[in-house]
Length: 343
Ligand code: AQP
Image (cartoon, rainbow, N blue to C red):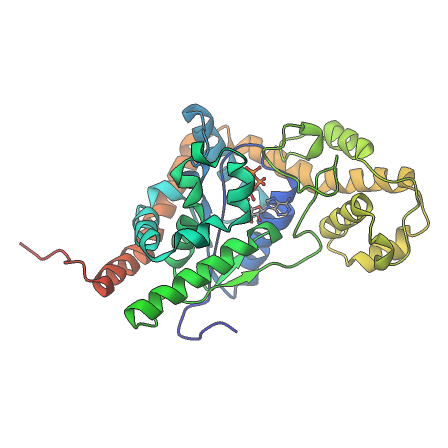
C-alpha cells in the first residue's frame, strides 16, 4: 500500500540508446500506456538521456534516438497532454537531486548491483563513474516527482529496491518523512522478454545479434523472419503452464503471445497445446505484425516533424519543473543549504 500522504504518481523511463525493442514495449511502454489510461495516476514518462551517456553515445545518434524514442512513446499511445513527456537533461533537478543521493547512497550498495557487474564486466576500472552511480540518478528521477509507483521490467527490480533504500536512509538521517517508498509495478506475462536466440538471456538493445530481438522499427517481413528463425526445442507446445518449465525458449514465445494478445498464458496454451511450433510461429508473427506495424508506421510519420517533437519535450519539461523545482528546494532546505533571497 502506498502512503496516502503522496499524490498517486507514476514515473518511468527508457534510455534513448537506439534499438527500441519488443522487450521495452511489453515490459515498459505498453504498461506506461495502461497506467496513463487507467486515469488513477498522474503519469510522467522520460527519455533518460543522462543515463544513456553512462556508456559512450555518438552525439548525433543520441539526438536522433531521443527524438525517435519520443515518437515511440507517442505512437504507442502516450498522450503528451495527459502525461508529462520529457527528456531527462531538460529537467535539471534530476541531476541535482542525484548529487544529493550520491552522498546518501553507500559505495557498497552500488557495487552489489547486478547491472553494474554485468555492464562493467571484467574491466570495471575502465567503466565510467556514471555507470557506477547509475542507480542513484534513477532514484533521483523517481523521487524528484515523489512518484509512488514505477512500472518496469523485472531487470530493474534491484534498482527500485535501492531507490527505496535511498529514500529510507534520507528520511532517517534527516528525521523527516519526505520521500515516499516507491512501489515497483512489475506485472504481466512479459516482464522479462528473452532473446530469440537464447532463452536464458534477456532481449536487449545492446545484444550484437539483431536476430536476438524484434526492433520496433522492423518491417513486417523482418518480424516474421525473426520469429520463424527463433530458437525452440522440437517438442510440441504443452497444454498447461507447468509444461513450460525447463523450456525457456518455448516459455518466452508463449509469454510474448500472451502479452501481445492481452490473454493469460493458460488460455494461449488451451488453444495451442499439442501443436508444433511450425503452426504456432506463423500465428505469433501475424499477431506481432498486427500490433507493432501501426506503431512503427506512426513513429516514422512523427519523425518527419522533428521540430514538433522538440516542442513536445520542451513543453513537458516546463510542466515537469513545476513539480521538481519545489521538491529540490525542499530537499536543499532539509539538508541545510542556504537558499535564494530576494535582493
Ligand atoms: N527484455 C526485456 N523484457 C522486459 N522489459 C524490458 N526492459 C528492458 N529490456 C526488457 C524494460 O524496458 C525499460 C527500459 O529499459 P532501458 O532502456 O532503460 O534499459 P535496459 O533495461 O538496459 O534496456 P536494454 O534493452 O537491456 O538495454 P541495454 O542493452 O543497453 O542494457 C525498463 O523498464 C526495463 O525494465
